[in-house]
Each structure stands twice: as C-alpha cells, then as structure tokens.
Image (cartoon, rainbow, N blue to C red; front, side, top):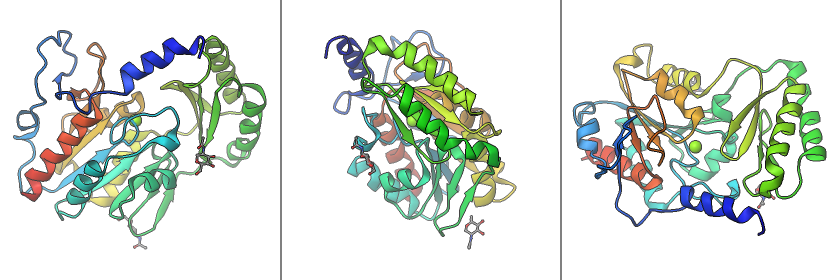
Length: 297
Ligand SMILES: *[C@@H]1O[C@H](CO)[C@@H](O)[C@H](O)[C@H]1NC(C)=O
Ligand SMILES: *[C@@H]1O[C@H](CO)[C@@H](O)[C@H](O)[C@H]1NC(C)=O
Ligand SMILES: [Mg+2]
C-alpha cells in the first residue's frame, strides 16, 4: 500500500459508491448544490421527449453505464441496466449507440446487445448491427509508428503498477494503480514519448491517451452515426446523450440546443456543456428507466 493508500481512498470516494443511496442531482453549472433533490427527469425531459417521438440514445460506457474500475477488464454493466437498454433497443422507437474510448469489439463484448451501434476509440471505429465496419483513415506513416510507440512505452514508463491498454489504433497509458510518487514523472514522460511518435497525448482519468493526429472526436462520431442512422434531417429528431468524461463534452457541444445531454459527475463546480449534471451510474439507470417508460409505456 504505502503511498498509494491516499489515492486509493480518493478513488474510492469518487468512483465507488451510491448504488443504494438516494439519487441526487443538481442543475448544470450551479455553484450552490446544497439543494440536492431526486433527478427530475419529468422536468428535464418531459417537454422534450413525447411518447411517439423517435429517439437516438447515445451513451458512453465506462463511468456512465458501468462503474469505473481499477482495471477495464473488471468493469461490468448491471443486469438491470442491460435489460433496460435492451427494452429501449427493442421498442422500435429508438436506436441506441454506445460511443466508448475502448476498442469497438471490447465495448460490444461488455454491452452484449445485438441491436446497438457500437463506436470505439472515441469514434474512430464504428460497428453497425448489420456487421458493417466504418473506420476513419489514419495516415500510413502514423499507423506504422504505433507498435514502436507501444514498445517504447512498455520499455520506459511501464513500472510500479502502470500499464498500456493497446486498442490497435489508439492506446491508453493507465496509472490509476501506480504508486503515487512515480505518477507525475511517468505521466510527463509518457506524454513526451507519445508525441515523439506523431500521436496526440490527451490527459484522461488517471491516464494519458494516445490518439492519431486526425480531426476526430466523439462529437464528430456522434454526428456521423446520427447522419447514417437517421437521415440528413436528424437535427429535427430527438437525441439524448449521457457521458462522464471530458471526451464526452464534444458530443454535448454538438447536440447543444437540439438534443439533451447529461454529464455524470459529482463535481459541483465542474463547468460542462451538458444540459444537466447527474451524480452517478445509478442516476443513468434511472434515466434509462424514465426513457423506457416514456417510449415503451
Ligand atoms: C484483460 O483481458 C485481456 C483480454 O481478455 C487479457 O489479455 C488480459 O490479460 C486481461 N488483464 C487482466 C489484468 O486481467
Ligand atoms: C449497414 O448499416 C449501415 C448503417 O445503417 C449502412 O450504411 C450500410 O449500408 C449497411 N450495410 C449493409 C451491407 O447493409
Ligand atoms: Mg466514460
């Protein structure tokens, strides 16, 4: 344990909690969250989503549909969450897309539903229910550097509990389990290494991500998925999105004004593009249940 104890305790406070506690909610960007009440999805969405509307439901996976865990392998979506998502998929009135930082096959395996449009690597990969895959073009010289970058990170910064999650077109260097005293230097050095191979280094939850230097993010991915799944008039359709991370803000920006978005966070002061903050994965479950009763009921 040693010096990693405070970090573990902090992570526990932030990430592991509240399935049994009352659900709380507060308005986006509200500095005074002392007045917390049940998330009132009737109030948030009642005017927006009518029973006969056709809906696109876009969701992040880690930290949104499933609790964050110390290792991505350990993450599990609850049986109830999966059932509610299945009911929405099968309603005939909604399509569901899960846009994740994981690789696309990894996120499909975690969700385990057929009728979902899966997108991986923050939208670089899309896998439709009919089996069609759509990947963004990555320049060959950049793609050729990928394995060298993985080797270099493994050689130089993987130690004392940190590790590389290889997602084939991008990677995540994780240090959530690393000893605290090594973290600042290993994060800084990982960033340098990633950039030296022509990839973009982005800070994430206890991690640094390496992404190919092409103009792509979850917001553009969402726009692409909506365009291929609805029609060019998708902006007149109803779109609801929930996500917990900074990479999800691009989706929130993209649907601002036309859709409705939720940022999963316990940080009262966090500034977000989302329409509302909700505090937990459990609150996301209540969101799905609300949508389900609205469109299937
Ligand atoms: C996580 O899962 C992958 C693929 O199933 C496996 O190769 C890897 O060893 C697992 N890691 C841990 C820490 O369980
Ligand atoms: C699969 O679905 C996508 C999205 O709806 C569509 O663009 C593509 O043409 C389909 N492919 C086949 C083989 O039906
Ligand atoms: Mg997430």
